[in-house]
Length: 285
Image (cartoon, rainbow, N blue to C red; front, side, top):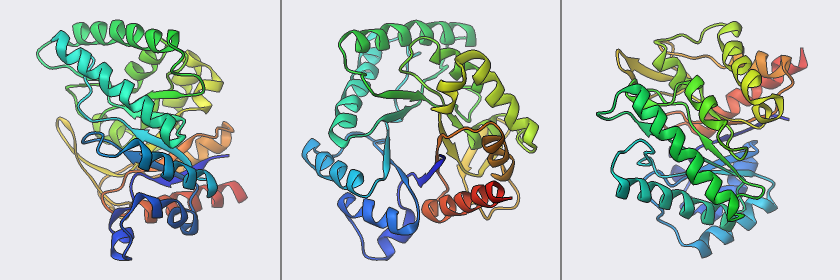
């Protein structure tokens, strides 16, 4: 079963007079959605007590919850102190996963910086194995999945192949396929069903069906330029892609049941519901 939800509630939630994370689960459920991603992108600005209260409500309303770790995680930073900070952000994220009752946490793998690509990937791979093996040894990851995300800019580590390869370092890692990012990096390369199939096929061939089935998906239309991603757009944009229909066809054909999170510019719940209806319409044919 594919679950659909937003990353954040967009303008609509606040325009209706809502303010608190404690009001989100009921609002999302009544909207007709069944998943939600809470972002700590700019830092962990919440108490664990509030996270626990919110988590109970997400469970009550049967909303599957994922988190997004801070944006400034970077496994390829040569500075050892900065690497320790990256590890710290993930350890804190795991604590919040447990407080919320979330089962997945998305994070950005790395930026290339001044290293050449091969060096950056080698360092990232080494540190992935080191960090997540340690977490596993400490029994921190039981029932949890950390989800490195495909990225949208050329200087970031995170092509779909790089992310799949990084996930090989530990079984608690599953990919976040951000198809808007992939489309931006490939300069509009996601148009047909076959374009989406090559990504899913690569994951199945390298990680197996079960881990691919358990993948996390971000979907939005994104404006891009020569170096990749510029900014997120709403789904009604007609200039930039990708469109959701070809991916929905692949998910149905392959009998996959990932979580699809909409990251539109400011209409995330509205556009998530559009995607859910597209999926259901194709499924019902």
